[in-house]
Length: 371
Ligand SMILES: *Cc1c(COP(=O)(O)O)cnc(C)c1O
View 1: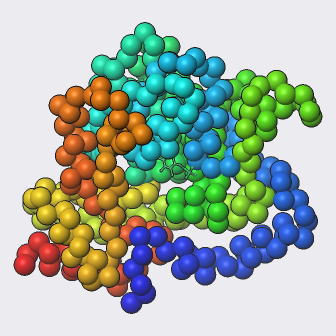
View 2 (view 1 turned 30 degrees about the vertical axis):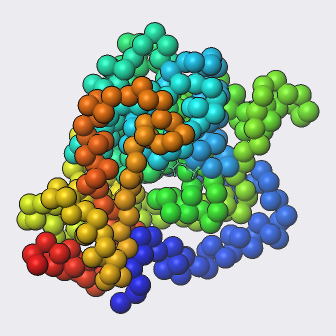
View 3 (view 1 turned 180 degrees about the horizontal axis):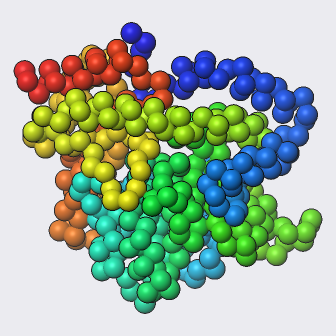
């Protein structure tokens, strides 16, 4: 059996090696390393895939979030609501810009930000909501857009884990004011280094964000905004053009593995399989179970002893991270996050899991719960 990994990029590469190698060599031969035709072509192809007016490629998914926030002309102290249970990048950029993060609880079954909690957290200073399409399915964008409209707020969809997912037929990241994504190698559409992109249907915001990515420059050596230097390398764009063709097939392979896991574990009462969110497809960036008998850490150790990696996404809620702990939150406002950090465990999930590997993982999990 091939060695089990959380993500098997090596096995995936072997299947597309010829196309990838040619794409990389093509960029080297052209010497168009920055903002070359590969970047422009990838941008157009991703716009077409997502059915969105503007894709703005940038350096990584964290920059994408930061640039999106920079484009909204927020003032220091303005509040941005996001989930307590997510990767830190989302809240990091809020603080970098002198804004205030307001963290809210997520739903226990879907791990997604709870619109009712967003509603309850709104103050006169609230300016934006950042729903995170965590683990590969969409937050409730109908409700979130409705709340945003009522209170005149911007919505930035953090789609780093959800690229290719649909919400009522629309692509994740194209439903709010702005969407952002990451092409970190292990993401559903990953390159071979860092990369990211921003999506919007708003012409003025798109123009502004393109400038911010490039030192706030709209005309060479005239700087109208304080910007950043955040670009997608041509080599990464060339790789992404190859992989974009496979994205739907890759997401299908992930769903197939998830379906196998769901069926394998359905009769274990102490193990809850991930719930499907309403109106969203699932692209399973992570396959995350909840262990309700308090033995999550034992299960992790047991699996690791058999050569099966397992990860805890995420062990500490953002409001309790040293960097962001304001002491202003009440534990009782976060019953779901508090439970999830103790219960969640993510199993290997990628495009190359084969029958033998899945069976072995299944048997091992069953062995843990029956012995
Ligand atoms: C990966 C990730 C990011 C950051 O992307 P980078 O490209 O690593 O900067 C942001 N938000 C979420 C939810 C992520 O999973």
